Picture 1 (cartoon, helix red, strand yellow):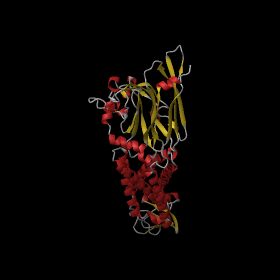
Picture 2 (cartoon, helix red, strand yellow; picture 1 turned 45 degrees about the vertical axis):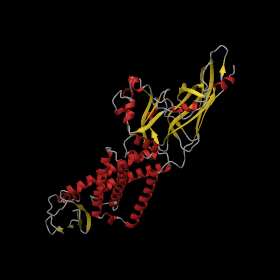
Picture 3 (cartoon, helix red, strand yellow; picture 1 turned 120 degrees about the vertical axis):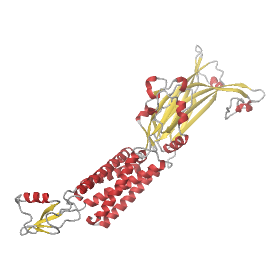
Picture 4 (cartoon, one colour; picture 1 turned 60 degrees about the horizontal axis):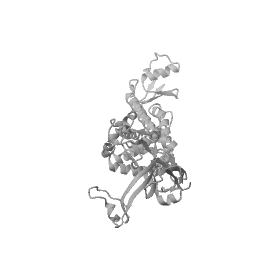
Length: 486
């Protein structure tokens, strides 16, 4: 029997009668091997007539305990497992739920990268073990390079906002681990075990370039190729009346169609009918009233010479399609309402306004929680409750919005959409990092508004495509009355 000198890992090869029978890390492993081959346990291994030791006698076992090698194996496995989980979390959401093909492709690439790292896990044990698979070192190197590329990208994205999140500690830890793992593999020159190192390097380079292009397109893509475009209508119909009724019923037809190329979420919507009261100005002084009085500090964007003391009153108001609903490309929504007026109405004109705020689906995705309304005047609503004397009365919709690229989601604080509606106030919707659930119960909504970062809200509105559209239709009341049908 010949025991060869220890290799760089401390492993000694054993041959008997010129035939290799195995390798051993220690004298104990050597005796186990001989026992399996049928040799007695008390065989004298120092008998030179039977055993020939090269590069050191039976006491030379550099890896007798092997704690360093086992520590490297554990660290490699832990790092690859962490990177695999990270790739799966990022890739799964994009591969199944992204809107564009490029974003789904990126999700699939992340899942494939995670699969490669999963294959690299047994390769770690083999490479720092008996190396029965020649490509084990190359597989580990590929998994480490993927971890380094992904964590570098995640840290780069995080640096764009520099918001403290707990996951950034994981990114940084995995980044440091990948640097250590790469230096360890370079020190061991693992490429020596690759059958065709140049082809392997070329394949890695091409894959990295394709991944970088896909990631760059997905991250930097701004949804301007398909601009937003809507058709909105608000039309009054012929009034209906009856001799025995003191009322006039005025039909109102509302219509909205998404004629653009991008589906949207309706964040909040509203239709409002205003009645205008005014007095005739014989002196023609109406043009001077657009600035209001000196103490009021208000102004109006219109004025007429022969109108004075103009007042607008809300006659009817309600929701149109409803917050959280969707309006896909080419989809339309219609509603018909009947507005009730007294026959002796003093209104000069009626003005119907249809308006809604929307969120582009190619920029963000609303969680299901947003679809359920919360009533601010009910104490049972918990965090959403606010005393009406302080906040008024609002129907609140609140929920998380997620960017369509999950790489952004994992490197940012959560963002939330908040929308408020009441029949006597205008639409109000914004996106910020504010979360109702973390605020104390009963806090004034107006105090919350004052505490929000306006720059953040503007930035997030642009990032997620939060927009606002409206249309109005104004008619003469006298003209409507002439059309009244019994």
